[in-house]
Length: 197
Image 1 (cartoon, rainbow, N blue to C red):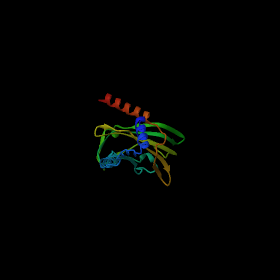
Image 2 (image 1 turned 30 degrees about the vertical axis):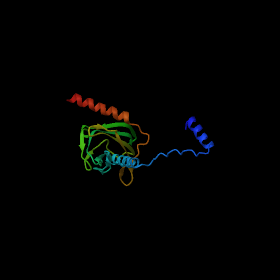
Image 3 (image 1 turned 90 degrees about the vertical axis):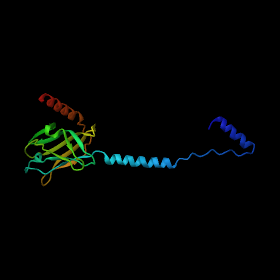
């Protein structure tokens, strides 16, 4: 309230007149409520309809050979997606007193394919090493497009656990930052494809 308005109200009160009440602003009008409802419904639709990709380990093809287990990449959303690149990073593996860290695996067979909506799948075979590792921690990075738009890369991390048999269990990414390592491999693959044409 400005100084002029305050003085006017004070004078009105001194002369025995009651001040005119200021009109209240209506905050919850029908258009405001409708706008809020449409915003919430729109946000939920965007979340539900976004592209969804999952990666799951399948059973071992050879007994005692954990890396014979293929991994299946699936589209679980409502729309098809195009996979540009699939890159596997062996973050850490201990096998027969040897340790591998941040080794990168890729294949031309894993790149440039479409996953149909709700049921599209692609199986990748790692065959990284023979034998039973003591420990293994790998990350599968998936670069994809949705309706020609390049989407943020998805990472899926798995740790090998030996129970009665070897099992790959899904793990959170934690503070692992493998983006630059994957970028380097994707760029190397792109250059190799160009020179082979």
